[in-house]
Image (tube, rainbow, N blue to C red; front, side):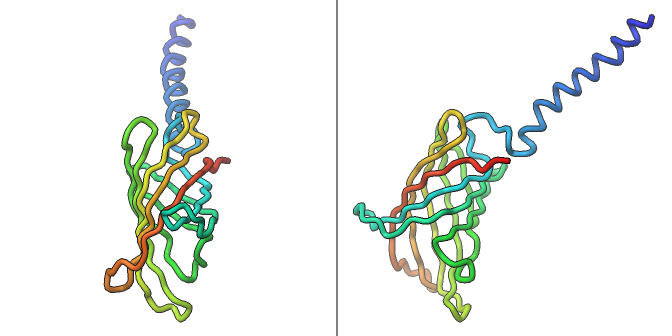
Length: 161
């Protein structure tokens, strides 16, 4: 009788602990399986003139959230002169993802000067610790006229606890 009671209590507890073990890592964003883009990444962005001449390189922090949204902030432009980048991402194939985001720009008098749209792809390594890719950078004025097109290479490492 006692053994039957213990088994009756233990079976549901074992099932609950197994479920918690599987769900908890993904809920925190830290236990994603290798190759997944979801999470926060410390990125190094290198801007070029699309002919291979480096313009500048700077750090960026990019968050790829569940559901396919992107939030980006970088040290390439002072934060007082731009909004955070906001956009979308999706799986293209295997460990390769497409992304696109936009931020608004301002001058030193806080007057709206236009926006920038960045679109590209990145591939996450099989362990899920690094990614690398390329992007186009298009800068527009307030009327939507394209002012300049640039290219960028990206390389990142997962930001972890």
